[in-house]
Length: 171
Image (cartoon, rainbow, N blue to C red; front, side):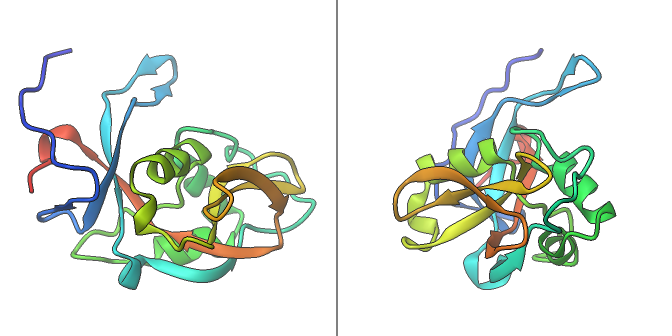
């Protein structure tokens, strides 16, 4: 992999032209055994890309392809096919000309919670796209600081995330 030389913007910075706030630098997922390049994880502005109540999906339904703890985009793709209210809401978003928003995986939501907790409601519980089982999905509780799992038909906050190549990180 070719080294990238640039100055990393501060976490919490608005990234010009990308309609998002820098939340983390993530290791790229492994797709069919091929390691993908690292990426910048962006969160939407709260006013445009957050809703306070959406369910993950149907209790008792196993969503094939929605178990990744690191790849929210792949999870969201699977959830859209399963008609998940949270995934359908986020996929309808167009913010700043970008429509590639998704529900974050548990790992992506944890990274954002670690790096930019001030960007989230302090007493909020946010939905992740990662399912634990046919009955449970993961959430991040910002009041207690814990990741947990709840029934899929409970409604929690949903925040839109997107991934961009590192070379697009300019403030």
